[in-house]
Image 1 (cartoon, helix red, strand yellow):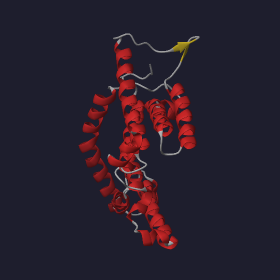
Image 2 (image 1 turned 45 degrees about the vertical axis):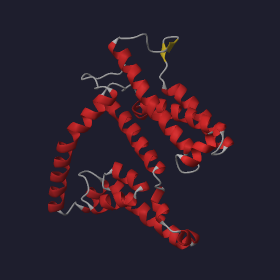
Image 3 (image 1 turned 90 degrees about the vertical axis):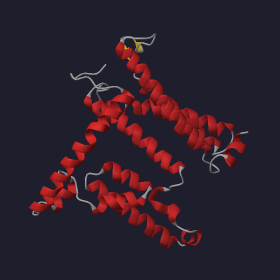
Image 4 (image 1 turned 90 degrees about the horizontal axis):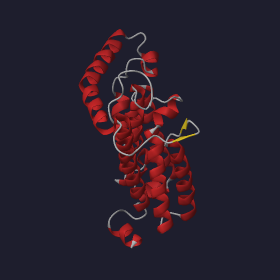
Length: 250
């Protein structure tokens, strides 16, 4: 049955990736629902502690990620073993990235403003995996024909150019654009030719003696943030819960 699904619903070999993505998203949503209930003091759920030590769910997440990753390597991309490993890996990754901000800051910032980085990491990961499922390959290699792929020079040149676009976007302070550009080169190209964000390495290096460019960069960044920050935060709050106004974790 697994092979039938693999052949007829999605591109061959991508069913494990689809299962991992589904498990990842569902795990994140379920975990956030449970933590929001714990935060509100509702339902039967409580924080897990051992000897007075709070056990964060990133801990079992790491264990499941390791098990799923090694299981996937051992089983290949087909068969029941590969499908189960993909699901286990997706669950583990969902648990780990739900506490990405805690790992980044080495502090319990789950319900603080810094904790929003966890939601951003989850959304970004899901989007990138979704692009891979849609048929995009890193640095635009999927855009090359069979003949071009056979010629190492063309393939290497394509990867190098697309990597350069992503690197320029990253240096301009456009992290999301650079990451999305890894799998969709046109996005990285747009980020590479547009103005850098204020304070980015590119702006500090090339706008130092260009007051007009600095001013345009500031105005554009202000307008962009004013337009999108509010809706973006509202979506994050709807998905994962609003952070506490006061500092502190759980």
